[in-house]
Image (tube, rainbow, N blue to C red; front, side, top):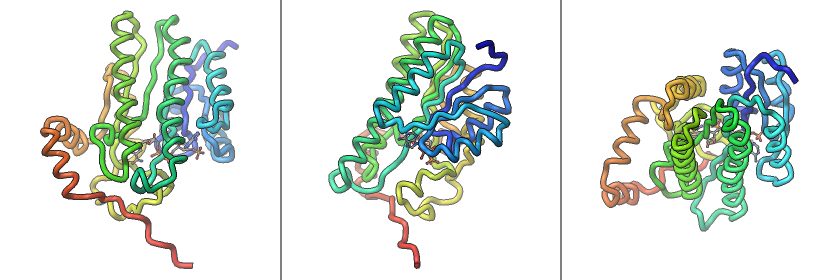
Length: 265
Ligand SMILES: NC(=O)c1ccc[n+]([C@@H]2O[C@H](COP(=O)([O-])OP(=O)(O)OC[C@H]3O[C@@H](n4cnc5c(N)ncnc54)[C@H](OP(=O)(O)O)[C@@H]3O)[C@@H](O)[C@H]2O)c1
C-alpha cells in the first residue's frame, strides 16, 4: 500500500495517555493503528479523528498479541510504536490474586518485548523510526502495595536503555524512549480501585502535557523522559538518596494507597 502519511501504532489507545497520544499524533499528520480491548471506544476515537485502523486485542492473550505483532510485521513503513497499555493494582503482593500480577507482567513486560521486537525488525533495516515505552516514575523505586507495578516499570526502563545502547553501537538512528510519568489524569487509579483524593491536586498532570513532553524528547533523541518539574526533582532525589535511607523513609510512611470509599447505593 502506498501511504503518504507516517504510520504509528498506539496500544492502550482507548483512554488516558494512549488516547492523548492518538489525538496528538493524528494532529501531527500520522495515520494510526489503535489497539486496546474496548473496540467501541477505539471506534469512537477513530471516528473522532476522521479515520484510523482499529485493532481490538487483549495483549495479555498470546493469540491476540500475535495478531498485533503480525500487523506490525506487515507494516514496513511503521514510523512509531507506543507501548502504552498498562494497569495498576491495589494491595500487598501476597494478599491479592496472583493472576492479576501475572497479567501485569504479561502486559508490561511480554507485550512490550514482543511488539518492540516486531517493530525494530522493520525499523532497524530501514534506519528510521521510534519506540516509546510508557513506564512510570514508579520504575525508580519499589513501594508497598505497588510491588509488581514498580518491578515491571523498572524492567521497561532497563530494557529501553539496553536497546538504546544496542542501537547506538549498531549505528542505527532508530530512537527508543522510556516515558516516565507521575500521576496523570486517566482511568488508571479508578481501574486499580485507588481513591484519587489521596493524591494532592498539585501532583496531577494532564495526559496532553505528558504526551507533549514525550514527543519533544523523542525529537531531541532523549532516551528517558520524566514529564513535569516536580517529578524530575523527585526522580533526582530518588536516584541520589542512599538506598537504605530512602527505604527507611518508605517503611516509616507505610503505603499511601487507600481504597476507594464504598459507593452509596
Ligand atoms: N495515569 C497515571 O498516573 C500513570 C502514571 C505513570 C504511568 N502510567 C502508565 O501510563 C500507561 C497508560 O495508562 P493510563 O494512565 O492512560 O491509564 P488508563 O486510562 O487506564 O489506560 C490504560 C490503557 O491500557 C489498555 N489496556 C489495559 N489492559 C490491556 C490489555 N490487556 N490489552 C490491551 N490493552 C489494555 C486500556 O484499554 P482497554 O481497557 O480498552 O483494553 C487503556 O486504553 C500505563 O502503562 C500506565 O502504567 C500512568
